[in-house]
Every structure is written in C-alpha cells, then in structure tokens.
Amino acid sequence: MTEAVPPTPTSDFVRDEIRVDIEAGTYGGRVQTRFPPEPNGHLHIGHAKAICVDFGIADDFDGRCNLRLDDTNPDVEEVEFVDSIQEDIAWLGYEPASVRFASDYFEQLYAWAERLVEQGKAYVDEQDGETISAQRGGYGKPGIESPYRDRPVDENLTELRRMRAGEYPDGSRVLRAKIDMQSENMQLRDPVMYRIRHSHHHRTGDTWFIYPTYDWAHGQSDAVEGVTHSLCTLEFRSNRPLYDWYLAHLPLEQTAPKQREFARLELTHTVTSKRRLRALVEDGIVDGWDDPRMPTLSGLRRRGYPPAAIREFCAYIGLTRTNSRHDIELLESFVRTHLNRTSQRRMAVLRPLEVVVDNWPSNDDGTPYVDHFDVVNNPENPDDGTRSVPFTGRLFIERDDFAEVPPPKFFRLSPGREVRLRGAYLVTCTDVEKNDAGEVTRVHVTMDPESRGGTAPDGRKVKSTMHWVSAEHAVDARVALYERLFSAPIPGERTGDAMDDLDPASVELLDAKVEPALADTAPGEVVQFERLGYFAHDPRTPMLFHRTVGLRDEWANIQKRAAR
Image (cartoon, rainbow, N blue to C red; front, top):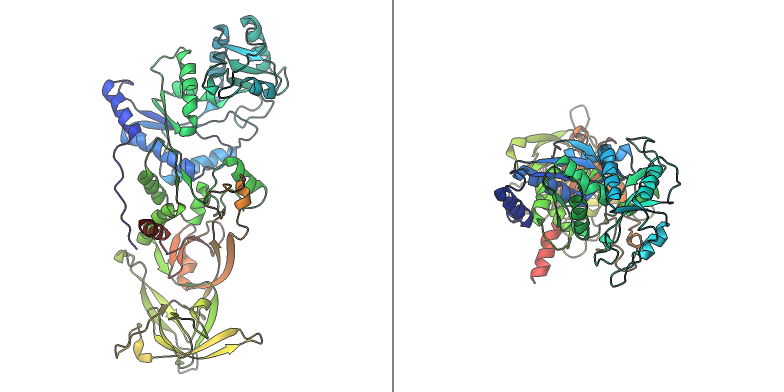
C-alpha cells in the first residue's frame, strides 16, 4: 500500500512576496505572522491549513507567529474554547511565540476610535441594525447616508463615551467609520466599528459595554503586535481595502502590515461552519465537539488522525488563489499511509463466530492445550519486533469469513474448504451447528497438525488467510465503525440546507473479541486490526476503539477511475 506523493512545494505566491519584502528591507528583514481564531468553538480541519500556513511560513523565514484569540464577541466565547484552541495547536506540532488576545488591546482600540471621531472619520449612528443594513444598498445599488453621518464631532465623542459607560441598551447605537457610502466595495460603506453588548466577557469581566467588530480589531491588533504579513482566507479579500484604510488613518510607529489571502480548505462530505457544528453539538446529534465523526481537530485526534499526516496533507495541497473542494479520500490517504508505517498490528474479530477445532489436543490432565505463535508487530518496521499470540481449540473468526453456501468467488471458510488461519494452521470445515432460526452458531473444523505456522509440508496452496482470536484468551472490546456524517459530497447542494444530508446511521457500535495484547494499548494509540483497518483506542474509555480509516485506498481508486 504505497502512494506516489509529489514533494512539498518550496515556493508559492505568499512566500514569493515575503521574499521580495525581505530583499527590499520592508520590515527590516523581519517576518511575523499570527493565527487569530475566535474562541467560539473548537478548531476544525479548515483551521489546520491556516495553522500550517501561519506557523509554517514564520518557521520558513526564521520569524515568529503569535496565537491571538479574537475575543470580541462575549456572547459566544468561552474559556473552554480558548483552552481547546491551544491544545489543538500544540497537538499539530506548533508553539506560538506568544499568546495574545484582542481584548489585550481594547484600551488602545478605543483610543484610536476616539481619534477617528475627532478627525471626522467616525460617527455614532442611532439607527437599528436592520435599517443600517438596508441603507448600505448592494452591488449596483447605491447606499443611503445615515441622518447621523454629519453630526458634530463633540456630539459624537459624547455619545461614544456614553456608549462605553453603559448608558444605552444593546442595539441602540453603533460607531461607524465615515468612508464612502457609494463605494463599489460594500466593506467601505461606513462599516460598524463598535456595537453595544451588556455581556460578561471571559477575560475583561463587566468592564466593557461596547465591543469592537472583527474589522476594527483585526488590523489594529496586527499593527500593535508588529505583524508583517497578515494571512487569511479568500473570503476576507474584499475586506483588505478596509484593513488598509483603518491602518492608513492611525499613527503607527512602523510600517503597516500587509493582508494577503489564500484559498481555504474545503473537503467533500464535510461541513466546517461553526454555526452548524455548534448545532450538531447542542442538538445532541453528535457526542460533543470531539465526537470522532466531527471535522474538529479534537474529533480527528480522538479518531486517531496523526498530526503529521494532516501537516503533510496541507503541504501537499499548497497555497492557491482559487477556492476548490478536495476529496476527503485524499486526506484519508495521507492518514492511511502514515499509519501503515507506524501502527502495530493486532487481531480483532468484530462480529464473532465461534469455531471449534475438533482434533485439537489436550494436556495430560485433560485441560486444553495452548499453543503460541510469534507474530510480527509491524512488517514496515522490523524494530517493532514480534509478540506471542495464544492459539487454542476454540476460536473466534469474523462471521463474514464463513458461508454455508458460498457465493461465486468466495474463497474463505465453507463446508469442505481448507483455509489458513493467520500464522497458525490450515483448517478444513467439517460441520456446522445452527439455532432454531436456522442461523449458524458454531463451526467445526479439523486442523492439519503438520501445517504449524500456516504452511503445508506437501506444498499445497489455499486461497484464503483469515485472522482469528483464541476464545479462551479473548478480551472484550467495543468498536465504533463510522460512515460519513454527511452522506452528500457537497452537503446542502441539493436542498440548500446541509443538515438535510446528515446520515442518521453514521456510527455502528459492535461488541468485539480481541487478542490479549490489545488490552495494553495506550489511550489514544492507533493500531491496525489486521484485514479490517486502523483503530484508535479512545483516550477516555478503556477498550473502546474508533475506526480511523479502512485499509482500502479509496483515493487511489478515485484516481484510477479518473484516468480511464
């Protein structure tokens, strides 16, 4: 199971521009970036690309990258999310040069807001949000200036200070920048800078009654921190003129940062809207933000995705100026390739069917004889050595590995057919037992005692090798098998609502029988269940295993079909 992966690109349009800035001495040779998530939910796979870009570019140019939490909306932000964001970044393998918050700069932002008011470049608007939105017009539709747009500077200052003092209710006033209500760029049509929120903030408590908007806080926070290149996704491209306008009207002590945009990461069968992800959690559709079906980094971590595979995937797709949707099978291919190199092999039976070896010997005291086989832990890494697996006269095999009436091209166990039990013996089915409903409940076989190790002395061949678990030594485990949380490749494309494509049967829980070595699997460790796929031991629940990915390389199959 190998895959040709092109080398990581050493150049892209963002890095090329940074090189130009370094050569020109624009920032004195410095490179500083930042990763600025809002702490209103867990990070998702789309954020992973931004993290790799922000921290990776800083590393490439011997620069620094801060984590800055954009905590400007106290109604939806929580300490839990602040903590989870820092855990996710560390898990991906990055360490911020420092951890900052937009709330660190609230006083400076407010002082600069008063400066714009004093310059006649900002005003307090007493209209409601719906009216302001309607007056902004639209593309090809002119904007309408607010009746408060030309109110005197002193009156605006008084109103702004009363807003800050908490004298007005939520929604009764906003502070707007005074730019151009006829601009073709809607972001420049007198955008809101501050809105009133009588809400408790997770860091500043009840100190503030007004909070800055993203656009007012973002670029100015970049400038305070000394950011040189503010990297964000393409949906913020139209915000760049506003980003530059604000900075151009402030008394900065150094060269203003540059905002540059790149394509966001979107995957098939995946939704990354925090609003929708929050709904999945709050409506009980999933078991929390770290449910293994979720595209959150905490969910992927619990499911067993290696952070190195995510980094390699992000490097492979690179930076582009055009949005596109990548097949989730491509990401899974990186995960599978990584786990194939690193995972220990184990045997587990997910849907057990009992097998009795009728000619299995007993000890002199009448107890069943126990044989042991040394089995390779990982054929990809000889240093992982071998383990001893017990074998007895009573076993479990997969129910799908037996057919009383085999269909065409079925080469596994059936009456009269000989198969190989992985690393152990050749056995032939001789009889079956059934319940009153006619279902097979037990299979009887005879073994060839000369075939120990799985090879017949006369050189005869068998067409199937099956895994197994000794019934006397089996350990009980719960195994979770996952399908796509969203069945459609582009959720919501058909109806406009992604939730219409939720798969109500996206998880199946099984009571499995597994070999004894799996009882020693560390929490969070991923192992390969032979013939079944890669499974992660849940970090909180002992002997619960989540299927990370299957063994079949679906991405390779997609590529083959595309080449036809």
